[in-house]
Image 1 (cartoon, rainbow, N blue to C red):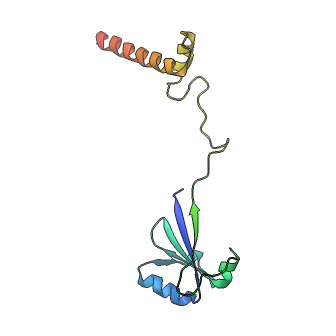
Image 2: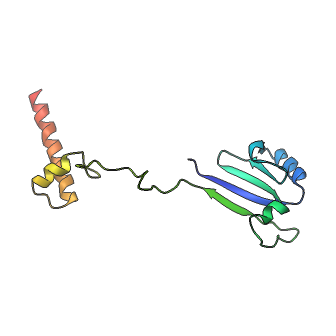
Image 3: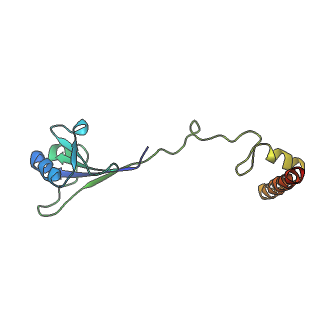
Length: 136
């Protein structure tokens, strides 16, 4: 899912506001527009939501900003944090940063920590590569 931002603005005249934002180059997304709100697309990730005062009241009871000033509401769309169902699982024998099976072989060799296991795995891979080069 892409990250998106929605800037919601209270408007007194929805039709005039739609015309204004279209003149600025934004396109109206009719799928998310009705008599009380209009979704104006600025980019793939940024949307301007024009809300009538009645629609705005469904989100907040805060007072409207005074005439000549602006008020807005920001909404962010982000990916959810991984849950136990979506979190990647490590192979039973592998550990992060090590090939599968390397952890078991280094633990058998007596490595006490993940750092020493990485060093042992790295030196084992280097020695194996040298042996292979010598045989060809």
